[in-house]
Image 1: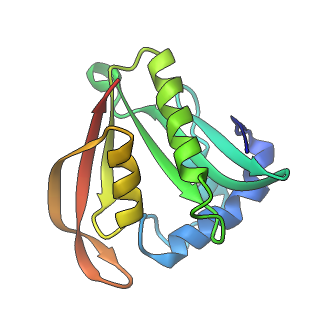
Image 2: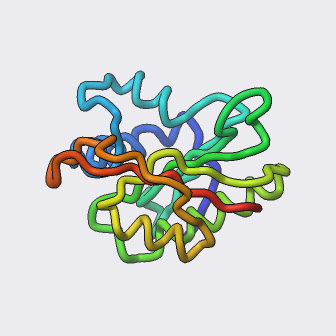
Length: 161
């Protein structure tokens, strides 16, 4: 698997992953009706944010974005979001992206990483983040409307760097 910084030229390969994950309704609260330009703006944020793509056999199979969790006095804590293409889960894509994001945020002198909204029913993601040293520091009850489960909690997860 190859990982590299994503560019605007990667958007046509990222967008189908973004659409499939958002439309599944289990992990992200993005609106379904985003235009391609709107979705690209949410995922490929300007600096200091950045994005990665994961490639298997030259094909984009996952993506992550990261940067400061908050501006100004909160900019020393990073955050990140991850998407893996349907059919590519269980192949180590999320773990590889997670490890790379953590390494890059540490190299950029972030002090910690905070995930603001990990859906509690996304048990694979919760297990992955726990295995990479994250703790659930709180859960906001019924903060996410899961397509399959109805109203479920959102975990706030944290890991020092």
